Length: 492
Figure 1 (tube, rainbow, N blue to C red):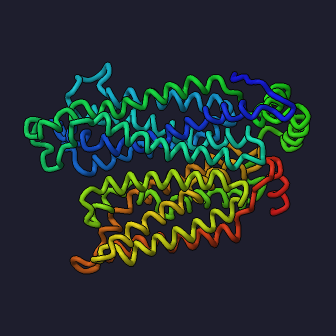
Figure 2 (cartoon, one colour; figure 1 turned 90 degrees about the vertical axis):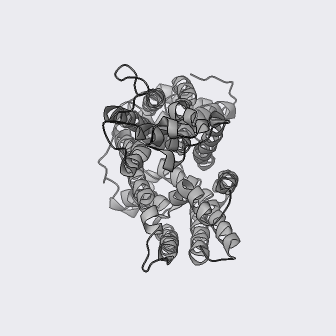
Figure 3 (cartoon, rainbow, N blue to C red; figure 1 turned 60 degrees about the vertical axis):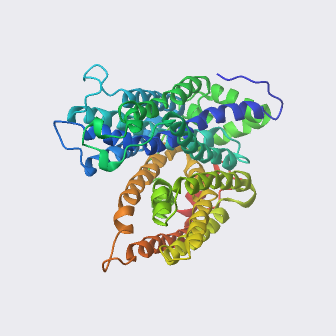
């Protein structure tokens, strides 16, 4: 266990150290979901050489997104694991899954297949390892915010949980640079070269096809191994310890974080809401669960992943010579505006950030809808996309995780968070898989119906999200996790 000196007000250093370990799970979340962006072309060219099956675009789409299947599974079982094994042990499992997935995706031939020979069976094995990593992502996405929320004092809980979103975005940015350095002087293969034999591919791209994509997936083993090791040294959360009748251990941890006198009061508040280990999911009414689910649904339905995943495609369609320049710039903007949320969530509250973020996203999305593809308006389109992404990063990106971590009563938190996060991954898959077909829709040959329809739809959903927050989402700023029990009982 991480140990640091404490004073009568608790040790802020101790708290920060265990939170920083927990947010490594968020970094791995971002790393794992973004690593495919640099590896997918080399991977596609590799399996295009298979002799026993045709690696179609459909197969490639499935392979690129197969980790999302694991994400849905991992988030769905996160409640069971968090409730029965504890938050800490569940995160150790997630770290091990990340590590196994990284090494397995790098060398899917291990033990069973001939190295470097693409086959249908090898493709199945590769996707198996990617699904394993996705399960780790699903677990981390649900339990890391839950862990941070349960150890953090109420006055800074929102800020600390927001660091998890920063870690996700930072993890994505890190893997972009890692992929860039792995690629080095080599290049990505062209789609038209694929399937014609390795000799037909540009010599500068051949290393990418045979080896480069392996190193990109394998690079995740470093942060994954570090996370799995360090998480062994953090404590279990006091809320979970009380739920399994280990009050003294809970008091020790609470004292280190909050100081001895305040720890007694917090412990008693926790015990007062822990009448039984768990309660039925609907004990606090349907609205409690519905609010959590819809926070997750809106976080994805506003269409942000259509921007993050397809930014190079969008900027390329705008006529940019080097779309990666704007993509990297947008990544930097995303990090800066995530910091805005971190340093304002406890001052301004959760609801105002969500509402203003929704309005900003609606303006950005509608700006793209009316300007995309129109000569002379390229700057308006680019600026609108930046406004759209930045507005998400100070609102729905981090604040959804904050609310999901703190909005549910102690006795149903594990199961309720699992359901909410599972809906998040389901709608992530829906948005990601429907963006390209919607974006390319045409009513008549050559029109841009799909462009304005897609972003017009996202803009409308952003306005509906603002209305939902205003009418249904409670403000949780400054409230303890135990206050949630009384709040939902009064709203039933």
